[in-house]
Length: 456
Image 1 (cartoon, helix red, strand yellow):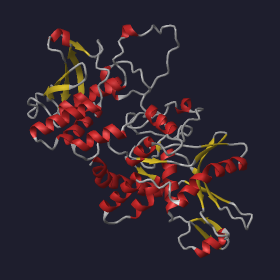
Image 2: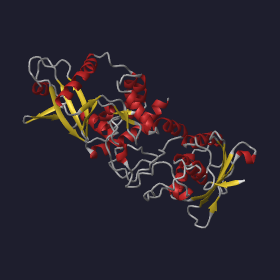
Image 3: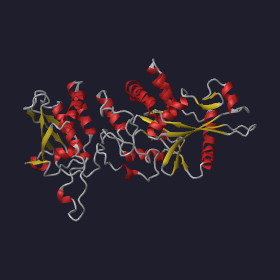
Image 4: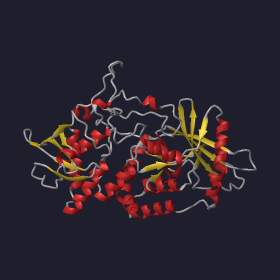
C-alpha cells in the first residue's frame, strides 16, 4: 500500500546527502559512468525549480522486502507535457539499494537527473523535519496565530508544516535571537544572508561580499565529493564546539582541522602565486605537519601572547578580551583562521592579532622600519602603518572574512629595554574587494591542488 507523504510521515530520519553520494559512488564504480555528478547537479536544480510533485512511499512491513520504496512525479525539463516517474528503494538504515525511472536513461539502476531530483527532495524533507506526524504534535489551538512566513521549497512541495527555522530567503529571519552568547568569534555579529540557501549556510554570519554563491557540489570526482561532504559540511553545533575545544591552539584536533584547510597564514602566498601551485600545496601541507614551537622566535611569541593580551585588556578596561580557537568559515568550510583574540565592547566586536618582535636590539620601531626592508610596518612622513602588501595584512583580512567582523586591532609588541615604547597598535578594516579576489583564488587552489594532495 502506498501512502502520500502529505498524509503519513516517511520514517527515514537519518537520511542525508552522504547517502546520495554513497549511492552515486557505488553506481559509478559498477558502471564506469563518470558523468554522475553532472546528473546529481541537474537533479538538484530540478528539485529547486519545483519540478517534483506527488511523493508517495510503501513501507517495508507492507512490501515484505525490508525496504521503503519512494516514488514521485518529475516533469520533463524541456517537454512541458511529459512526466517521468522515478522511484528509489531505501533501507530503514537509509542506504539506497536501487533506483529506477521511466525516462530513457532511467534503467535499473537509474542515474538520471529525475532520480536525483527525487533523492534531493527526500533529503530536504528530512532536513526540515517534515516527518513529524500531526498526531505526534501537541495541540496549538490556544496559541496566538503565527505571523505569515515566506514559503520555502519544501513547504510548497510537501504541504507540511516545517518544524525547523525557515530559510534565510526571508528578510524576517530572526538573527537577533542568536545574539547574546559570547561563544565564538563569529556568533555575535550579524550579516544579511539573503539569497543564500539555508542548508549551505549556518544560522551564523558568513562572509558574503558578492551575490555569487558557490554551488553545493563543486566540480570533482565521486571520491573527492564524499571527502568534501564529510569534512566541509559541518553543522553549526560542530563548528562552535571545534572553536571552543581549540582555544589553546596547540591540540591535536587544532592541528588536524588546520591541515584540512587553507588558513589565514597561507593567504598571501596563495594570492601571489602565478605558477607551480603543486609545489606551494606541498609546502603548505608540510608546514602544517611540522611542529615549529621550538623555533626561538615562535616560542617567544607564544610565551608573550598572554602577557600582551592582558596589556590590551588593561588598555580597554570596559571591554572583554578573550582567547579564540580555530574558527571555520561557515559558508566556505575549507577556509579557517585562528585569531589571537576577540574584543567585545558592548555590542561592538573586534578581532585581536598580536605580533611580538624577537630581539629588537634596542631599536625603536622607526629604526626597525629603516633597517629592515621586510619589516611589516612602513613610515610615510612620520605616519606608521601596516604595509597593505604584507602577509600580516592578508592574514588579518582572512581572519575578518572568516569571523565576519569589520575590524581587527593589530598589535606589535616591542620589548625594548632602552626605550619606553612597548606596544604599537593599529585598527585594520575589512577590505571586501580584496577578499573577493582572495576567495576566488583560494577556491581554485584548494579544489585543484590542495584537496587532491591531502586526500592522498
